[in-house]
Length: 241
Image 1 (cartoon, rainbow, N blue to C red):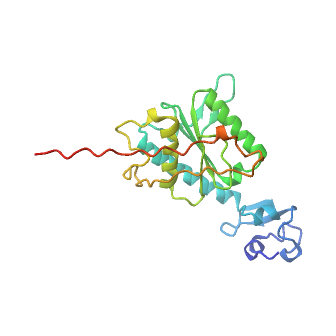
Image 2 (cartoon, rainbow, N blue to C red; image 1 turned 60 degrees about the vertical axis):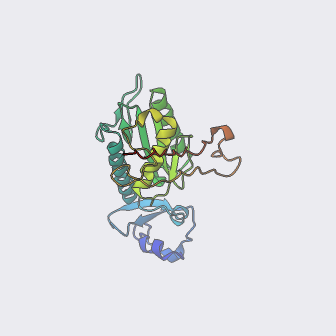
Image 3 (tube, rainbow, N blue to C red; image 1 turned 180 degrees about the vertical axis):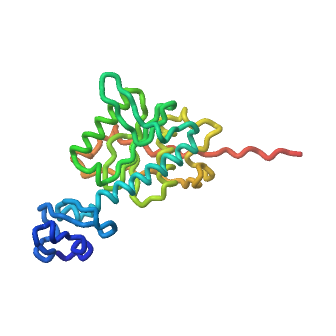
């Protein structure tokens, strides 16, 4: 295995005494690994997934959860009354769903999709079904998808896993301005306002990533969203004294 960082996490005991030098890094075989940050975190994953960047699932969950909490706090500053604790959505005749970020009053749901737990056809289908159920229940759903994931709908935004949370917030607000402009009143900060939110939102046009033509991720032209509109602020003439 010619990846020192992976060799250091290779769990020799759990792998039956096999050593890293006996394994091809890109193997499809599932192997056991020990987290270098928290050695008690042990998990099974194929060599090819590790080479592609998949890390400790427990640490990944913590990192994503922190970003969700910070994003919820930023959005709560823009939408007063957003309850970061109440995330359960009751659906008639179905089991309830739990949203990542829920604004019940404004009928808005924001989902944060980290790469580790949302990659793969089965998880993609699960996310599509959840979006469909929430939309049917009258909610606008905006998914924040980490860069390795393709968007599932026109309202989705794609961000880097290391993007600053104010950039992520600005991307979400751009989509709110496009799909629910009624939620951004004159008294609320606009997505392009440099003073918006507690972290001083910076303008960034959300990326729309298109996978290989003809693939299951390649959206039809009519499904691809137009770039979020840029709001121009009109200068008022100076008042003469």
